[in-house]
Image (cartoon, rainbow, N blue to C red; front, side):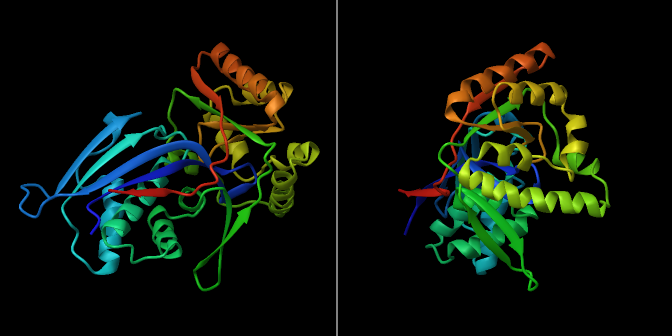
Length: 308
């Protein structure tokens, strides 16, 4: 019987411009979750310790999201939830549009599955993760790694498609020192869209898939445009227009809102990555905003488990 397991889960960036709520990519930034059985005669059935970024903001009672996912899997199996100690080390900032909640859901489900003897396959865990999160764009790449496109079927299940990502493409992530709640970012979106906007995004998503595969600069410059969410959400992000202009002038193919924001993601090549990084940081700083800006990599490895 496995008594302790560590699960490492990547941050994710969703939407990538026109891929609203359906495309996401795993990034080389991680949260780590360690689950250890507590003895049956322990006074407590749950102990949670948090370290790392924004640790003071994460709950340490049974409302903790990783624990909620942990219990969800045992309920799905029809088994009692074992007493457990959870140690969480955070490398993904909260409320920035980087899938921090998806890491907790995937971490909790995988940790529970391992302690239960690994009865569920990845696809079953994925379905539970989507049900908990409510949409697939973050939890699917967090679980599977790489860049993933998710489409729902008529029967309510999901078809997942791996999206090729050219090795020349460098994601430059910019994380500002302010938060933006997903609910606020959802609230500003319209309830209806024109046919012209729908056609625009369908065409641009198709071009985005080819642009990611080929790293064709002309395709990517066009493909990263969007009419569904970015025109509305960018009003919530101070300095967005100036940062976008500066990033493109420095050699980015485009700049998009990561998830619901306020983190921003530029795509460029290795030769221009440092210039894009500097342009974003300098432009935001001139607007009085401190930001962590760094080139990352696509994390092709899905969430991984170490047993003890």
